[in-house]
Length: 202
Image 1 (spheres, rainbow, N blue to C red):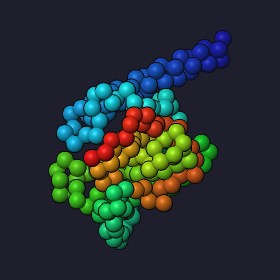
Image 2 (cartoon, rainbow, N blue to C red; image 1 turned 180 degrees about the vertical axis):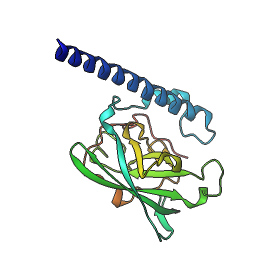
Image 3 (cartoon, one colour; image 1 turned 120 degrees about the vertical axis):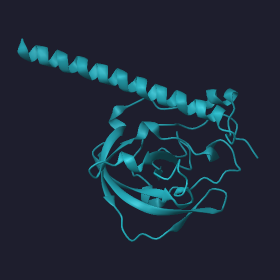
Protein backbone atom coordinates (compact mmCIF):
# COMPACT_ATOMS: atom_id res chain seq x y z
CA UNK A 1 0.00 0.00 0.00
CA UNK A 2 2.90 2.37 0.84
CA UNK A 3 4.44 1.93 -2.62
CA UNK A 4 1.08 2.51 -4.28
CA UNK A 5 0.55 5.66 -2.21
CA UNK A 6 3.98 7.02 -3.19
CA UNK A 7 3.34 6.34 -6.86
CA UNK A 8 -0.05 8.05 -6.74
CA UNK A 9 1.35 10.99 -4.73
CA UNK A 10 4.24 11.44 -7.16
CA UNK A 11 1.88 11.31 -10.14
CA UNK A 12 -0.43 13.90 -8.58
CA UNK A 13 2.52 16.17 -7.70
CA UNK A 14 3.88 15.95 -11.25
CA UNK A 15 0.44 16.64 -12.73
CA UNK A 16 -0.03 19.72 -10.52
CA UNK A 17 3.47 20.96 -11.43
CA UNK A 18 2.79 20.47 -15.15
CA UNK A 19 -0.52 22.34 -14.91
CA UNK A 20 1.03 25.19 -12.93
CA UNK A 21 3.94 25.42 -15.36
CA UNK A 22 1.64 25.58 -18.38
CA UNK A 23 -0.33 28.35 -16.65
CA UNK A 24 2.91 30.29 -16.03
CA UNK A 25 3.94 30.02 -19.68
CA UNK A 26 0.42 30.97 -20.82
CA UNK A 27 0.59 34.15 -18.70
CA UNK A 28 4.07 34.89 -20.03
CA UNK A 29 2.80 34.62 -23.62
CA UNK A 30 -0.20 36.83 -22.97
CA UNK A 31 2.13 39.50 -21.59
CA UNK A 32 4.41 39.00 -24.59
CA UNK A 33 1.51 39.61 -26.97
CA UNK A 34 0.33 42.63 -25.00
CA UNK A 35 3.76 44.22 -25.36
CA UNK A 36 3.30 44.38 -29.13
CA UNK A 37 0.29 46.63 -28.60
CA UNK A 38 2.06 48.84 -26.03
CA UNK A 39 5.36 49.22 -27.88
CA UNK A 40 5.36 52.22 -30.21
CA UNK A 41 7.96 50.67 -32.55
CA UNK A 42 6.16 47.32 -32.72
CA UNK A 43 5.80 45.69 -36.14
CA UNK A 44 2.47 44.09 -35.17
CA UNK A 45 -1.01 45.39 -34.45
CA UNK A 46 -3.70 43.67 -32.40
CA UNK A 47 -5.20 42.10 -35.54
CA UNK A 48 -1.84 40.43 -36.28
CA UNK A 49 -1.59 38.60 -32.97
CA UNK A 50 -3.72 35.70 -34.22
CA UNK A 51 -0.81 34.82 -36.53
CA UNK A 52 1.60 34.25 -33.63
CA UNK A 53 2.08 30.58 -32.79
CA UNK A 54 3.90 28.67 -30.06
CA UNK A 55 4.87 25.13 -29.15
CA UNK A 56 2.96 23.65 -26.23
CA UNK A 57 4.67 24.41 -22.92
CA UNK A 58 7.15 21.66 -22.12
CA UNK A 59 9.12 21.78 -18.85
CA UNK A 60 11.75 19.46 -20.37
CA UNK A 61 13.03 22.57 -22.17
CA UNK A 62 13.50 24.45 -18.91
CA UNK A 63 17.04 23.59 -17.90
CA UNK A 64 19.76 24.68 -15.49
CA UNK A 65 23.09 25.55 -17.09
CA UNK A 66 26.56 25.91 -15.62
CA UNK A 67 28.00 29.40 -16.16
CA UNK A 68 31.62 30.26 -16.86
CA UNK A 69 32.27 34.02 -16.88
CA UNK A 70 34.60 34.92 -19.75
CA UNK A 71 37.57 37.22 -19.20
CA UNK A 72 39.59 39.53 -21.42
CA UNK A 73 36.95 39.50 -24.14
CA UNK A 74 37.00 42.22 -26.78
CA UNK A 75 34.02 44.12 -28.13
CA UNK A 76 32.95 42.80 -31.53
CA UNK A 77 30.40 43.68 -34.20
CA UNK A 78 27.51 41.22 -34.38
CA UNK A 79 25.96 41.39 -37.88
CA UNK A 80 22.29 42.33 -38.21
CA UNK A 81 19.80 41.28 -40.86
CA UNK A 82 19.70 44.75 -42.44
CA UNK A 83 23.39 44.55 -43.35
CA UNK A 84 24.69 46.68 -40.46
CA UNK A 85 25.99 45.51 -37.09
CA UNK A 86 25.75 46.15 -33.36
CA UNK A 87 28.49 46.09 -30.72
CA UNK A 88 28.41 43.21 -28.27
CA UNK A 89 30.80 41.47 -25.92
CA UNK A 90 30.91 37.78 -25.05
CA UNK A 91 30.03 37.63 -21.36
CA UNK A 92 29.78 33.98 -20.36
CA UNK A 93 29.71 30.43 -21.65
CA UNK A 94 26.90 28.19 -20.48
CA UNK A 95 26.96 24.40 -20.54
CA UNK A 96 23.95 22.14 -20.14
CA UNK A 97 22.42 18.83 -21.16
CA UNK A 98 19.21 18.73 -23.19
CA UNK A 99 17.56 15.62 -24.59
CA UNK A 100 20.70 13.65 -23.76
CA UNK A 101 23.03 16.06 -25.59
CA UNK A 102 25.67 18.17 -23.90
CA UNK A 103 25.47 21.67 -25.37
CA UNK A 104 27.29 24.99 -25.07
CA UNK A 105 26.13 28.53 -25.78
CA UNK A 106 27.41 32.05 -25.25
CA UNK A 107 25.66 34.86 -23.38
CA UNK A 108 26.28 38.35 -24.77
CA UNK A 109 25.94 41.93 -23.52
CA UNK A 110 24.85 44.77 -25.78
CA UNK A 111 27.42 47.57 -25.43
CA UNK A 112 24.95 50.35 -26.26
CA UNK A 113 22.68 49.26 -23.40
CA UNK A 114 25.31 49.14 -20.63
CA UNK A 115 24.66 52.76 -19.65
CA UNK A 116 20.88 52.42 -19.81
CA UNK A 117 19.52 51.90 -16.25
CA UNK A 118 16.63 49.79 -17.56
CA UNK A 119 18.72 47.40 -19.65
CA UNK A 120 22.21 47.54 -18.10
CA UNK A 121 21.86 44.02 -16.63
CA UNK A 122 20.40 42.47 -19.79
CA UNK A 123 22.00 39.27 -21.10
CA UNK A 124 21.28 38.38 -24.72
CA UNK A 125 21.00 34.74 -25.80
CA UNK A 126 20.43 34.45 -29.56
CA UNK A 127 20.43 30.95 -31.05
CA UNK A 128 19.62 28.82 -34.06
CA UNK A 129 18.62 25.16 -34.08
CA UNK A 130 17.42 22.43 -36.44
CA UNK A 131 13.85 23.75 -36.56
CA UNK A 132 14.83 27.00 -38.32
CA UNK A 133 13.25 27.65 -41.73
CA UNK A 134 10.97 24.68 -41.09
CA UNK A 135 8.67 25.30 -38.16
CA UNK A 136 10.48 28.28 -36.64
CA UNK A 137 11.82 31.53 -38.04
CA UNK A 138 14.83 31.00 -40.31
CA UNK A 139 16.77 33.80 -38.67
CA UNK A 140 16.85 32.16 -35.27
CA UNK A 141 15.27 33.11 -31.97
CA UNK A 142 16.22 35.03 -28.83
CA UNK A 143 16.01 34.58 -25.07
CA UNK A 144 16.47 37.48 -22.64
CA UNK A 145 18.14 36.99 -19.28
CA UNK A 146 19.56 39.19 -16.54
CA UNK A 147 22.86 39.26 -14.68
CA UNK A 148 20.74 38.71 -11.57
CA UNK A 149 19.56 35.35 -12.95
CA UNK A 150 23.05 33.92 -12.44
CA UNK A 151 23.41 32.41 -8.98
CA UNK A 152 26.30 30.28 -7.77
CA UNK A 153 27.62 29.96 -11.33
CA UNK A 154 24.35 28.55 -12.55
CA UNK A 155 21.47 29.97 -14.57
CA UNK A 156 18.02 28.76 -15.57
CA UNK A 157 17.31 28.75 -19.30
CA UNK A 158 13.70 28.32 -20.39
CA UNK A 159 13.43 27.69 -24.13
CA UNK A 160 9.65 27.95 -23.80
CA UNK A 161 10.28 31.71 -23.60
CA UNK A 162 12.29 31.83 -26.85
CA UNK A 163 10.86 34.51 -29.11
CA UNK A 164 11.22 35.77 -32.66
CA UNK A 165 13.10 38.96 -33.52
CA UNK A 166 11.06 41.78 -35.04
CA UNK A 167 12.64 40.88 -38.41
CA UNK A 168 10.38 37.81 -38.49
CA UNK A 169 7.39 40.11 -38.89
CA UNK A 170 8.71 43.09 -40.83
CA UNK A 171 11.77 44.52 -42.51
CA UNK A 172 13.20 47.82 -41.31
CA UNK A 173 14.67 46.48 -38.06
CA UNK A 174 18.29 45.83 -37.02
CA UNK A 175 17.98 42.30 -35.63
CA UNK A 176 21.26 40.63 -34.62
CA UNK A 177 22.17 37.43 -36.47
CA UNK A 178 22.82 34.62 -33.95
CA UNK A 179 26.56 33.75 -34.06
CA UNK A 180 27.55 30.29 -35.27
CA UNK A 181 28.79 29.35 -31.80
CA UNK A 182 25.12 29.38 -30.70
CA UNK A 183 23.93 27.08 -33.47
CA UNK A 184 22.48 24.06 -31.64
CA UNK A 185 22.68 20.64 -33.29
CA UNK A 186 19.26 19.74 -31.93
CA UNK A 187 15.62 20.65 -32.54
CA UNK A 188 14.31 23.05 -29.92
CA UNK A 189 10.60 22.23 -29.95
CA UNK A 190 9.76 25.03 -27.55
CA UNK A 191 9.02 28.71 -27.69
CA UNK A 192 7.72 30.70 -30.63
CA UNK A 193 7.02 29.13 -34.03
CA UNK A 194 6.86 30.71 -37.49
CA UNK A 195 4.71 33.80 -37.90
CA UNK A 196 1.95 33.03 -40.41
CA UNK A 197 0.89 36.57 -41.22
CA UNK A 198 2.11 38.62 -44.17
CA UNK A 199 5.53 40.13 -43.55
CA UNK A 200 5.37 43.91 -43.49
CA UNK A 201 7.57 46.37 -45.39
CA UNK A 202 8.70 49.67 -43.99
